[in-house]
Image (tube, rainbow, N blue to C red; front, side):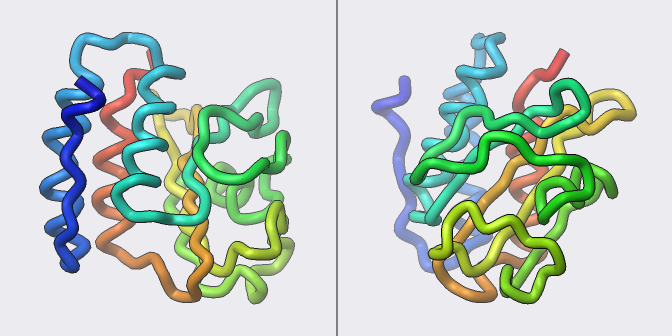
Amino acid sequence: MAEDLQISTSPNKANQYIALLPQLKALLAGESDKVANMANLAAALKQQFGWFWVGFYLVKDDELVLGPFQGPVACTRIGKAKGVCGSAWEQAQTLIVPDVDLFPGHIACSSLSRSEIVVPVIYGNDVVAVLDVDSEQLNQFDDIDAKYLAEIVALVDFR
């Protein structure tokens, strides 16, 4: 199934997401392991968009712990309200950062990261993980990314 994933070359970002969503649903269909599903989502998003880093941090024992990702090595643990990921976790809302150097308390896992979006994964009333996406370009992310990435993380069953 994974080898059947068709990557869109459409320049329109929304169209890329729209084409990718049914493929991601099919990829995850029937698989109950959340780690496997997070790994495939991270790989598919990295392949589709070519972003610098795509991955998940899982809430464990009151901190975010690195989960499945694609890209260079990353920070392993992030405290609540620390950096973009910890702030998105604390606020339970998506954060779009056009220039990470201007974000107070940004955690620089890589100096190559220039912009970032972090989408909380909410199960019940709790944030159980965050999807973190970094780009080497400034102003890479917008409300289109926020909308579709929220739909994508909702595909993972966090029961």
